Image 1: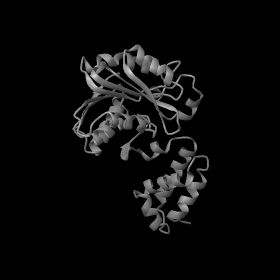
Image 2: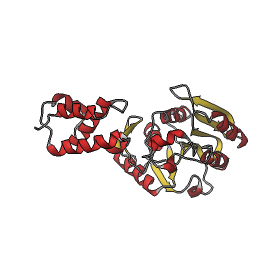
Image 3: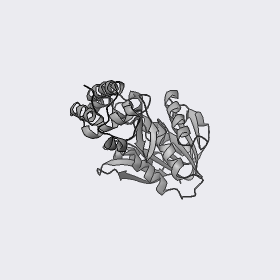
Image 4: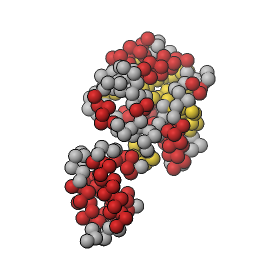
Length: 278
């Protein structure tokens, strides 16, 4: 018997009881398979679901119930109200990272033509959000993964921002020579190698998550190199783990940065540290 759209959503929801919002995710999967938005589902619940759609949704539901992130199944994730392409090549943008964007924007006038560097750009989420909010800013983004840079460039083209950002292939500051910037932002890997939560993140690229025994290896490189790539009065802002605020502030201070502070996320956990080159 052919299922209606509403019945397919109900069946899918029943198979996703281990996820946080099963009905929402069921709707998203069905809408994606149909090439429609969620609003369309409400008006067409009694329409018959095509057989190929039913089979596709059932396959996705099995993968999702096995732990594969919905963003990878859908091939997209919203960040800063931007519709971003994502895949296994890149880390899925998190809402916590919007704290980093908000903090950066608070240090940039609306008509600022500041030069901004995004280190380890991944999907391009941070660079694209800043480009959207500060249309005169000059933005450079680096990543050591050519596949990630391809995803970021695709997102820029989709958003009409492809002429606004320079994408450079290389690890951290390697592709930059002696270029200096008004601001450096980064959401680098910061998970410790033995962190027990890594088991829940097995579908995401390990190199975008893990950074040595204490999770600080990449942050050490970024902070230590910042003074040589910041203009006088320029700011460094980094995202880090909830238990790393003190250690990251110490790195900033050792690098000679001033006005060092750590900001908390919506759950009142340390999330972003910033400092200024005098």
